[in-house]
Each structure stands twice: as C-alpha cells, then as structure tokens.
Image (cartoon, rainbow over the protein chains, first blue to last red):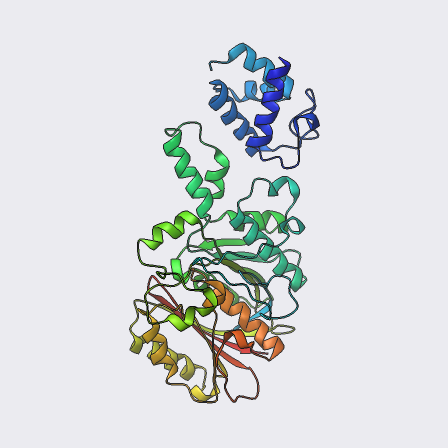
Length: 85
Length: 355
C-alpha cells in the first residue's frame, strides 16, 4: 500500500505539473482540493484521466469521483480495490 | 471613422522589449532560421496555481496583456479584443499527438482546453475581473488588424470614455517550422537573422513569434499616439497597395511628404520584395524607412510588434540604427505609416499619428 501511495504521488506531481513538489510534500490524508494541495476542477479531470490511463479505472458517477479524489489515501484505497491494470 | 488612441503598449519579442529601458540597443540574433521570444518572468503576472498548467503561448499572451494594463494604470478594461493567427500551437500538437498515441482514449483535457484560440482572452478576463466584451479574431495575417478595427468601431459607437485591451500573440514550434519549411516559408540555407534583409534575392524568411498588447481608448488625454486608419487587403498587387496608401493619405488630408517614417515588414523573401521596393520609391528624401522582421522573424501578427515599435519611436523621437534602412530629413516623428505583408499574401496598412 505504501508503495502504491508513493507511485500515485509521483504520478500526481507529473500529471498536474506541480513544480518544485516532491512526494514527501503531499500528506496522505490531506484534501487534494481546496485547502490541501489547492487543486481545481480541471485538475480533477486530469486525475480521472490518470486513474483510467494507469489503472484502467473509469469513474462514471461524479459523486463517487468526488469521494475517490478526496486524498491520496482515498485514491490508493480505490485503486487497490478496482484496478484493472 | 474617428481615430482611437493608444495609452500604453507592451511587447514580448525575440528582442529585449519587455523590460529593457533602451530601445533595441542590445539585440539578439539567430543562425538557425528561428527567432524565439526572450522569456519574461511570467510569475510576476500570473498566479502560481494557474501558471503550472499553462503553455508558453498562454504565459506570453497573459503576461504581455497584464504588463500593458500595468503601464496604463488600469485594473480592468471595458473589454478584451485579441488576434492570433495560430493560437496555441504547442498544446494543439500535444493533443493531436496524444490522440494518435493513445488511440483517442484517456486524453488530457488541459491541452484541449488551452489549445482553443480564446484561452488567452479568457484568462485575461478572469485575472482582471473583466465581464465586458471579449473577442478573439483568428484571421491569419490580419488577426491583429481585425482586433484593432473592432476596437475602433466599438469606440466610435459610444460617447462615454472606454478603454479596451487589444493585443495579439503567436508562437512558433519546431514542428510548425518543419511543416512550413516544406511550403518554402524559410530560407535555405538559413542566414543569420540580423543579415536577413541583405538576402532579399532568395526565397523564404526566418520564423518568428511574439505578443503585443495595447490599451486603446477614445479619450485622447495622456495617450501615446492615435490610430488614424487601418486598411487590409488579400492577394494585393503592388498597384493596389500603392492606391490604398494614396487613399489613406487623401482621406486624412496628408501628402506623401507628410509621412515621417515608413515601418515596413520586409521579410527578406524575394517573392515579396518587389512589393516594398515599388511602394518605397514613392517616398521622398524627407521620409525615414525602417524594417523590423530581422529582429522578430515572420509570423501572422507581427504588425503588433510594428505598432509597439511605433509607440516607442513616438516617445523617444529617435530611430535605432538596427532598424534604419534610410534616414530621412524630417524634424520629428509624427506621422508613421506601417506597411506589412504576411507570407499568406495578406497586406495591411496602418496610419499612426504621435500626440
């Protein structure tokens, strides 16, 4: 699980071009949107693309997507349960 | 139509035009046929959360627009009108490349969103909280001219004081350069850019890019110059351009001797050089002749650089040696005629008058 979180953080940094950030700067449980990393709606689309491209996960329900994208931990949990790649 | 006035101007170009105090004293050159802009510190004009996602063209356009507003001392304009010949080429190339690579699945939205032509306008509107008129013209070599004309018409329709942010931006990419080299856009072999105009006997030019923005108003007070006339023609013959110049001068009660400076867009391309040669023979020893594409390269909205340059010349009343083709015997720089031709055979003529 820790390896998955580390990989996920690296993918988030690369995908969202979070310049100057390292995986250590991202708290596992901090909110990705708003107060945490301060991501916005376009970033959420990019994260959906990240999940589909790297893990074969397609989230159709927006409400479910909101829960999955709350934090790195929630994303990693969801990936572990639903990954197809 | 009544003239409109430029109260501030900013340009990002291959030269040090964004921040430098001196005008074209220390110039950059290139010997690979491409002139890329000298990047500014974009983080001064764009918030750090947004900038990470932006392509180079977005940063160029937004920063130049914001700098222009800063120079004009305006927080929010009454509207934003821009022109771009190609929009965000790099984002479009990435998006189209991904479509092929990923078989049209899991495409990143950012590149698609930003590759639309009106991205710069949208960002500028959000940054300045401008809810007014917002328009982007994509008319190849006439894109900036259309934006300026739109501003002029809007300002002529109102009696209240209004200021529009008007600008243009275009970027060059290696892929664009490669594609257009197959259409004989560029010189073979490439000459050093500063030497470009000495090679007007061979086909092709050098690739360029840039952004230029102006605050355009209907209130003459505290402005740099007026835009008296904007004319455009597609596939013009030499005679047509000459006739247009005569018409412009006539409608403003000017004689050819009243023009202090002709700023022309000679690109070093032998196919279009006769247009300029013919036009310039009509001017007397009184008129100075200057050219600029050896400093910027050829691109759709290079007229923006010419208009910015004219505003600087009005301020400084001195023509740098690097752009001078012929030094005239005029006492001041008051009436400037910009004659620009783009490779897709679009020509534009602008008459500017210093205040």
